[in-house]
Image (tube, rainbow, N blue to C red):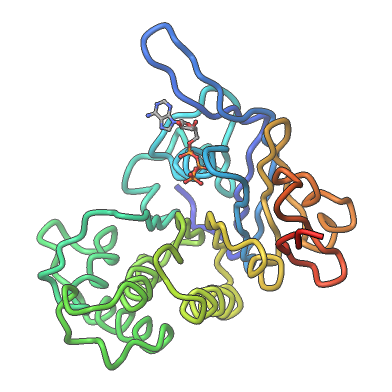
Length: 266
Ligand SMILES: Nc1ncnc2c1ncn2[C@@H]1O[C@H](COP(=O)(O)OP(=O)(O)OP(=O)(O)O)[C@@H](O)[C@H]1O
């Protein structure tokens, strides 16, 4: 495999995602044609059950698409072996089992696994990279703590740090702000935004925080029942794409404030 350039792009061509059990085939979304560039923070938005996690698992290579193609830079995703994939895509899943007995440093060090020998021995270079990531994600004070001592918000930063330590051009996160309060949600969004700027990575994450995504993300992948599309928040707003995301009787999209509002009774 050739060296990956900084401008690596994740591209899907006529992608159809879903589930195939024996003879049964369940399509969750199809005709997905998206392109992601380096230095882009991209949120995947859509109602519960629309297929955000299925999409993220498919573009991560841990779930086979029903049809279509996923390309990482020059390479077809399906042609990469596990190690090659792990050097291209860092994945942070919600409720991923992690060993909370590890210290923060040790957990982040696991991100270096694609580069260490089979014993997992860290080189000087690995240690340096881990220290850089600890600085970058502002978790110096957590460095020697055990993971079971962390709050949800702190653990989320540590998991993001681990994915940065993996040093992949693409990072995929499934709902990284679940269980966080409003301040810590905004904090994680800001961290992700800073990381794409500083590291030129592509970060794609599923979120229900549409108002925050509109304010902070470079692009949004909007999953509708009949169409999945990618565009800047501004373009999606001007195309009226958020208007019919939810049933209208309770909440509506207010174009002036670029946010969803609860409808008052009268
Ligand atoms: N293993 C599976 N086999 C068959 N169908 C599944 C499987 N896992 C999920 N689904 C279905 O796929 C659809 C999409 O689920 P998915 O979890 O991707 O949606 P989501 O947008 O991430 O939802 P949420 O916002 O609630 O997390 C749902 O209808 C779900 O029931």
